[in-house]
Length: 150
Image (cartoon, rainbow, N blue to C red; front, side, top):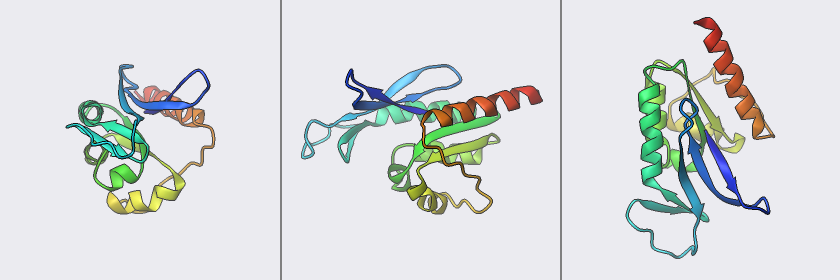
């Protein structure tokens, strides 16, 4: 999952990837200091954020490990970056090829682009969630249901 980092005023100061199974976190993005900045090696500037490719590599490694052993793999905030083959793109491909049920969290305006990029046909289940906490509650419910099957 991804979650926003907020400062004392509640403003976003970045995003972290969270490994649900182990609780580890890596900082994926921080606001860029200049839109015209030249990114150092391993860092990509998108919109107003600087993304760390090493953090995406760590998150991909979690997915790669879990895609073969877990019942459910969740990848949050799949969007333009992944459609353009960046960000969590490799992790999404690994998860979709694995045995686990893959849950992709996608903004509604990006759904068809994501479906097209990864060759997802109907049926694709969707859930409109206005509150970000809804996704965490959904993941908890899926986790409980899969645990009950064991």
